[in-house]
Amino acid sequence: MPRLQTLLALAAGLALAGAAPAATDKLLLTGGVSTLDGAAGGGLSPWALVGSNATAGQWGLAAHGALARTQDYRLRSTGLMLALDDRVEFSLAQQSFDTGRTGAALGVPGLQLKQDIVGAKLRLAGDAVLDSDTWLPQLAVGVLARRLDAGGLAPTLDALGARRRGAELYLSATKLFLAQGLLVNATLRASQANQGGLLGFGGRENTRRRLLPELSVAWLLHPTLAVGAEYRAKPDHLNPSLLGSGLAEDDWRDLFVAWAPTKHLSVTAAWVDLGRIVPAVTPRRQTGGYLSIQITH
Image (cartoon, rainbow, N blue to C red; front, side):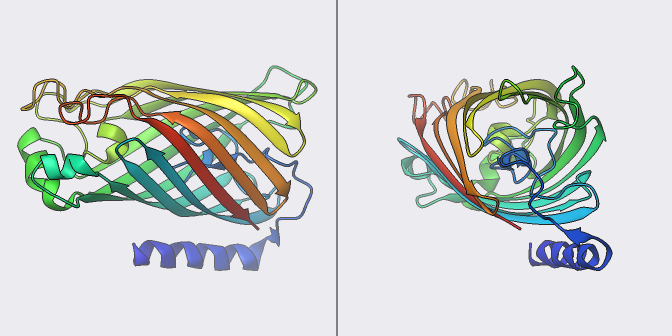
């Protein structure tokens, strides 16, 4: 991962040499926030919006730290984002997943799953703000390349046929109704990531990517405050498996509040429902809290 951070630093240096830094002419929250995967969007799903404060002819940087905690698990995410010309976005994220008693039940006490995610997004058409008085959405295509460090769980994933590297493609359409203060996003993701990649990619009985829908809606109560909800469909490549239905995978949901007191800071709090995660060990649905802080240049 240090090499990837070096590449991002180099890209930022090139941006500094060729474009103006992000000024204060982008409306608050119209760049979204950082997802758990690092791309700009909501907490769970990428949007067609390009992150940071950068508009046309500008560059922008953003850094985030996030924590999601449920009854039995804890997921941390940190990342960096570089935006150029309000058209191209590059992102890096690192995730750490504390498996709690599930790791012990699987024979790997203290197990932490770690994942590196490299993302890129390209705006294809539309401008969410300038086209807010039309029906034309902003469209963007993106890729998320993932690498998993499964630690002591690696032999189990190998037995299940789950690889530890994978890539997802997505197409997002974001429509901002500025007069009504309403944002709607739809994303179609091609994925074979098990539990967002934290349990590898694909399985012995299912290696194909699935097309999965994701929906987000946000209501701007104030220029600095938004509330909303997200839904993210998930694949189910490891069900059935050697553990029967013990690795069944559920869709994710959240209800969130995003607050941007300044151009350079946003805070997102949410209630999350991550469904069942390894239901053979922890059969209850994993619900809990999510908090993310993003600093933007």
